[in-house]
Image (cartoon, rainbow, N blue to C red; front, side, top):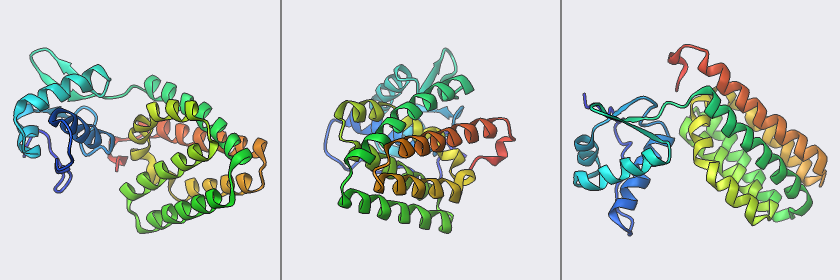
Length: 231
């Protein structure tokens, strides 16, 4: 088996326009955030290049950039490895996420119109279906889309920019707990939609804060459990 151990069909095709190094970087980052490449996994330049159908140079450049951004660890005489986040790193990131998302929920309750609320309802229904179907990747994507919509409805561009900076790491931490959070996460989303619909800013803030804290707690519980629970 290849050191990269990529699941069949996991490697995206580099068909979009743009600089090759940027496309390789985006492809590898997506593989990391979706955990197709798992924390601690050895990343071999030649194998990644073969999977992506490119030379080793853009892969090397991408790995260096990912190292700078904290996604990859470059170890002397050993090579590149997907970074394994510590509990402290996860806790700090998810705490910041709670602050940003709680404020977004408050602003969404103040500003959302009927079309925006209908969009949240549709996204929530899609997430509930993904949970029912046991499609973890779709659950993660639906969760990200739902929270992005709340942020959009907040109408604060600076807040959205800050949230965008942590969004991919949130996905990274959420993926292994998506199954555990399951239906309960979407019950909480329904509660949030109700608060936003009623323009209850205080309740929306409270619901979102509790919601994101539940995810943070679930992540920490998972890290103390056997690794076999990953999925």
